[in-house]
Amino acid sequence: MKVIIQIPCYNEEETLGITLDALPSSLQGIDTVEWLVIDDGSTDATAEVAVRHGVHHVVTNRTNRGLAHAFLRGLDACIQYGADIIVNTDADNQYCADDIQKLIDPILTGEAEIVVGARPILQIGHWSIKKKILQKIGSKVVRMASGTLIADAPSGFRAISREAAVRLNVFDNYTYTLETIIQAGRKGIPIISVPIRTNPDLRPSRLMRGIPEYIRNSLFTVVRIFMTYRPFRFFAVPGLLIFNGGILLFLRFLLFYLTGDGAGHVQSLIISALFMGSGAALMVTGMIADLIGVNRQLLEDIRSRVRELEYELSKLKKNILTHKSPSSENNPEDVEKKKG
Image 1 (tube, rainbow, N blue to C red):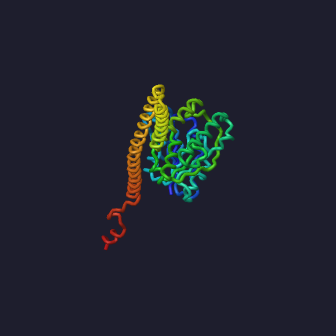
Image 2: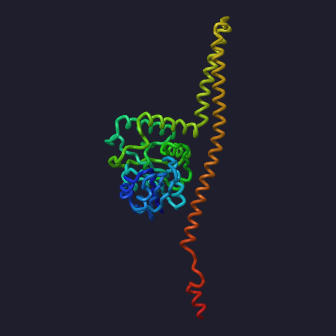
Image 3: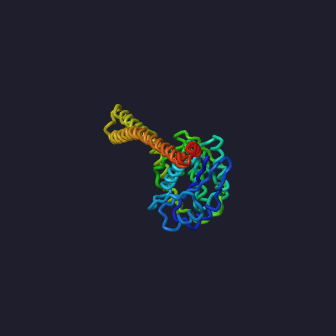
């Protein structure tokens, strides 16, 4: 059983060493623990710091592609390196590395395939009241969208089994945290959260530069995820409501028309036609988007199978390299036969 701890990084030379020094080199129930750093186009000495601290694998992007891309590339690399469980943490040492065991235990026991660390939000001293409230509201929205019970949706401290990792895809460029939870809920991947501890703040958050930006990006992310994973409900339900509103306005006009006062309420007929046309268009859009969603699910299944094949290929290559049969010249039995 192998665990790979991955850390997405962008210009983290000042904090990465502290984070790496705290990582465990062994875990209960695990045969091998390795570390992987995704250097997302850093312009400082992030990669050099990783190498000096004994990181087993360093994956480098030539340019900065963003946190979500770095996370996904890390998953792909961990799968190819033969990880059975992938642990994701941040380079700013925000999360207590001693709690990694808490993350992997539910996967080892078969209780879950994804485990998300839930921070003690109310006890984090350097967070403002507004940020704490927004974190709670955001997590509530994600729970409603995903049908899960994850207490701290934006937490990046999480463990993922290989079986779950091959099924995850990230389409949003802002963050992977919300989307992967909603995907897990939609795909029926067992996911739970466990309480974890945090460390003192080493630097300000780069993902959240301000409350307005955080609200805007998070809202856009949730809306985009709804459009991606529940397209029919996102388009067709509002369309049906608007269409029914148009019918009510038409019935209102019809009532006045039958009583001889239709000429004075032509505007109701015009608005009714607009509402019914708009509602019908949204419902058709919902049906088309739902069909596109079916095609996307097929593509995701193909991608998952490709990841599985890459994993099996990496295992095969490793077995060939480590268990290569000796040549007949060096085989002791053949040497004895030649002597005889």
